[in-house]
Image 1 (cartoon, rainbow, N blue to C red):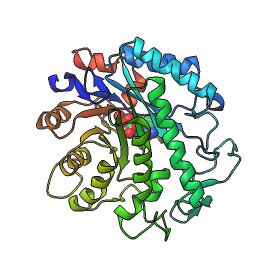
Image 2: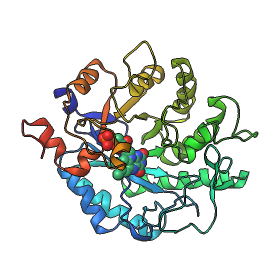
Image 3: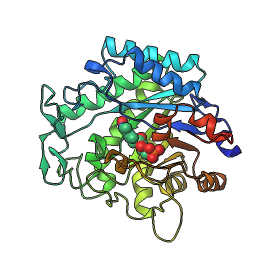
Length: 351
Ligand SMILES: Cc1cc2nc3c(=O)[nH]c(=O)nc-3n(C[C@H](O)[C@H](O)[C@H](O)COP(=O)(O)O)c2cc1C
């Protein structure tokens, strides 16, 4: 276990161990404002010795950046005052934290019937293949969205967060630009190749970097899968992955957070390296792995009602010791038990 309990230092990030709380939407911020309950929830995970907490996705200042009125905003006086309490509580408990900055893009309507005051927006109006539930963004929509990501980044730094994560995974706005099925644009934000369709992400990262300066650590979360297409791979070979990640790194990403549902699954044939392993190898950047760490079942099945049992951390430690990745994100175990980090290092059985 020792390799999981070494400190990690990168620019503004100085964390005591390698355990990261994965970003998890909770929908308990009425009208987008994180309450004292939200602050207490995160402080409890910091007290439980989590090295770095990534917040639930929190949305930027665009009218249609969210499909849920209880998802927190990362703009506006009241919401930012709520976030100030969150980060102060985490720091008081000896933890570190970054907000996960999010725009959902074209979404399904919320089950309550709540809708934003303007239509959902994305590269071409599609949330997934054949599902048009929004509008194609104009040049000025895109420019305003990039600026809104930048403002959120500046606010994260101003409030005292240690880092920030951009949500570029799981089929949301940034990922809708990456994916040929949802990005059918013929302008500079579209194109036949993944590097061409990365233009939007690159512009967002550059703006964020401009706002936070060189010394603030910026994380980008990516996934090869989407809820609507588990088997889809954006980069089908290591060469394609290198061509995808290099410009993102050059634009200012410090750490790639490589979302998998099961961390032990190899990314490409012929090697047991997972996504975080390949991302580190081809980009030279630090990476975070995630997906069913300490559990025998994955999270989408959990949403469908399946439960998971505790599983050994041996395979994780083997890969960590080999240097495949730098940090390890844990989701559901930290929902179930804020003290998971402490308990998993001792011989006490998690309950
Ligand atoms: C309740 C819940 C909410 C989630 N919300 C987000 C989110 O807001 N942003 C995100 O990038 N991933 C989200 N995820 C995915 C997690 O960050 C993580 O990648 C996933 O749960 C796999 O980790 P685990 O197997 O340790 O749970 C969510 C997962 C869960 C269980």
